[in-house]
Image (cartoon, rainbow, N blue to C red):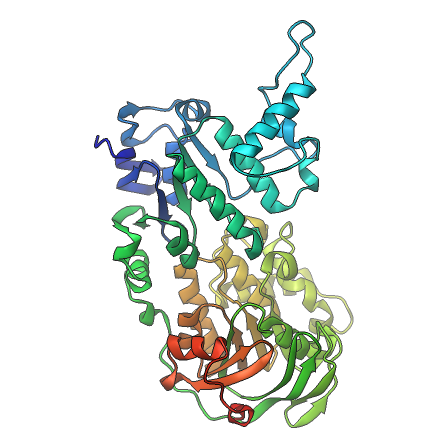
Length: 507
């Protein structure tokens, strides 16, 4: 094994009954580097990592760690060797304290009485958290911490094992963006100490910010490894799905339908002001801008989650009053929220229950609906949206992010809205699922739906939208037609440069 590598996995293959999960996969991780492991759901990333941490022991191939060939019998042997994993679904005991979680099974005890030495536990907890630059009270219950702080405790636990290789599986999937920087700071500090990080994420902007190299798996096979500097987003996507970014979007010619939504001088104090635009039947309008520009707040008012302070909303040439979500629904407006897990789904319920919950009243005026009709509706949605689930009774928490998002879209479509608002429709899902959702959005527009897409991903806005409205600090900075849009032009408007006149935003 080359000495510059902390880890080398060579020709790894793994078979489940009837399924070849991995076929001759290679992975090499340099000492003190952040290495992104990328691929669609089902590409084999999780299986490879489960082999590395000793969860799967029946595989073909060889693993070398710090120059020595290793064969893990179980997870404990991997931990003892210096390999730890922080799972996407954090593993902790919520009713126990931070200190108790950190040293669970390895608590410092009094020499003669055998009881837990609380003073030493506190001291060691503070020392351990101090190593990663975090201050958390050792006596706080884990359930009372924010998700990001729980994650910091999990990182500290990995450090406590004196881990030299830490696997982080979608570490930012459940933490707000303001706390991502704290995580990145800790990753950089670990890297400076010679710790190697395997970083699994679908978020390409994060990969470019934090990783040194990346490896792509596709359908259980090794595609390649490159430094971050060697590959742009197009190349990365092409490696993952076998086609270019531009090929993910449906080429469509929008029809010039009638105006179905007019927003006139809409204002919500402190969020946005004097927003005006039209939206036509069969049109996809992209809403772009920096974080805090007012995009989500604007569509929330159009739908009725929030109330505007002034301005007018006209739907099909009729002025309407939208003060609550039910008003938006009654006027044919549907919203797919940016936070599907909190606002869009009940994770512990089934696919059928999630699809049906907001639609019982509309689908049956007597408030009664037969089980057979419910099953038929669910099956039709699963088929129409190509939702990959073992059955309609599967709990949605067990589905991939892409299929969860299809369920959120499906339940909104059951109300048959004329105007569909999609806020960050592909956040946190893999590139293959993104492609399917892009096709669905284009199909819905072709069927006559008027669609607003809010997205922070410029290639997504440019690939989907017929027209792009750019906000800057709560105001319309300008609009761009699809054929004239570029990332440079959108960003110039988003930063408040070259503002166009408000009248130019009218259709």
